[in-house]
Length: 78
Picture 1 (cartoon, rainbow, N blue to C red):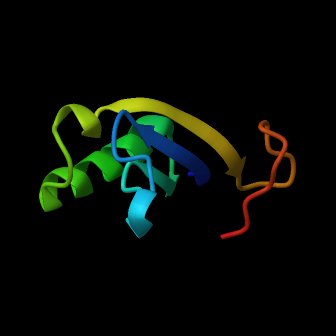
Picture 2: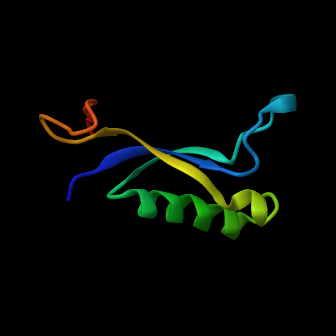
Picture 3: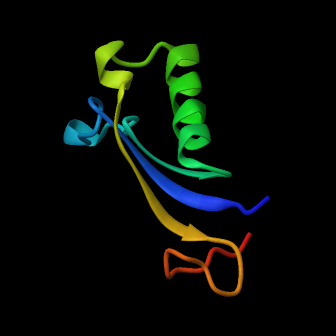
């Protein structure tokens, strides 16, 4: 199992206007992109934050991963 760092962006809740938390932007350590989004979505659903459509995935980006020579070019230390 190789852990990877992802940035998950949802369709809504991505602004911090007024000092609020941008719940639609998250950094997640997970095994794959699908798992990263599932973790964010589960938390948003559990806490009932935002509208359902705003919780949908916009994009998931791989930022770093464990290992000496990660394919993405940036090493993650866990």
